[in-house]
Length: 389
Ligand SMILES: Cc1cc2nc3c(=O)[nH]c(=O)nc-3n(C[C@H](O)[C@H](O)[C@H](O)COP(=O)(O)OP(=O)(O)OC[C@H]3O[C@@H](n4cnc5c(N)ncnc54)[C@H](O)[C@@H]3O)c2cc1C
Figure 1 (cartoon, rainbow, N blue to C red):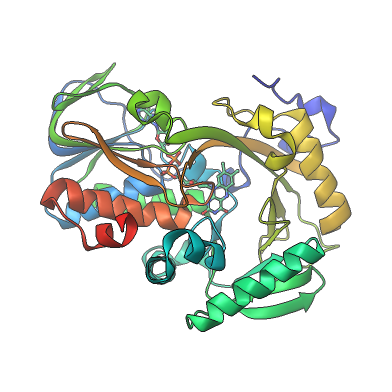
Figure 2: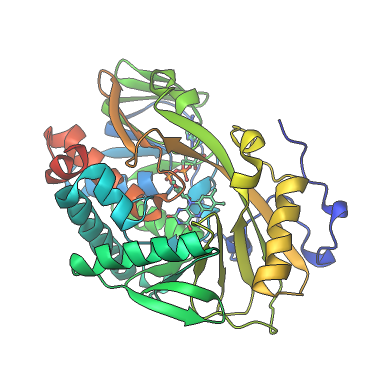
């Protein structure tokens, strides 16, 4: 276990020292959902109200299902509302590496599906999205050569990418990528799902799952199908999946508005291990450094730590060029799968699980949410052939 960050260790902006709170949490919570009090019935119970679970709920509603959704905390309170806000095409691997790992046809189809999904997210929750593209910046000669390989593979498949040289460094520009406010999107999805008839409960932890019911402290939900849409700590909730997913902590920080820099595009650098974007109000949101402390970051603890925060802050100062104080520091749990692709499994009869997005679940998690809804209800999904090969 890492020691929690003491905010006094840093010269942070004094007015904004709120422990482990993401930059996205500035807005007022427009709606909250009551904890379950008493038993409920549904066709499908969805455990986890992050981006994947909420995408799943919308698909279930489209399929005419009666849905109850529960979250141990609040809507978007996990990684889905605490991440970097990047909406990137493709899998967790760069396109040429996805081709090597998955075969050309599948890698190409999956890339196209993720571009379609970015379009869908932009259309569904337009107010949260900025379609500005993204930059992959090389931090070494070897990475520049890798960018060349990625560019060739992208162009050969007709996907949008171009060489880039600018203040951020040398690399690639992907015009179809986007950024969003991930917490705001979760809240909008939850609000819309409730409006369409889903029964949602926050502060309602699933303590046991199976045999056609989800047990919580407030009551049980009887249902035909249970879908567990939990990324980080999935293997704790469903130990059958341990060995195929493993939980890690990712950490970020944000500054007050930083007029000394002007970054129009979100940037990921050094093989994607460091990433930042500047928000329209000038604040810089930055994460990374997990690879530098790998041993301690394979953990189910989700509090920020001094050593990783110091590392991110040194990138902020030396690479990104920001001098303004830090306003927020936060962390969250995600799961890595033992493959390029996430997991979609039925670990118990009537129980489906998705997760293990390898640190990039905003886009592919939404697709998996839709896919698992279709499989649970209809027994099939066109998406399954693509993802399962
Ligand atoms: C710091 C950081 C930066 C990241 N940056 C990016 C990025 O820029 N782009 C990108 O694509 N991805 C990024 N990711 C990864 C991405 O955030 C996740 O893959 C994605 O949000 C997972 O969403 P989810 O809905 O599947 O899971 P989660 O967001 O983890 O949601 C699961 C929900 O389930 C709830 N839950 C857990 N256990 C129970 C239980 N027993 N009962 C009821 N509810 C339960 C939790 O409270 C949580 O709200 C980042 C992650 C982090 C942490």
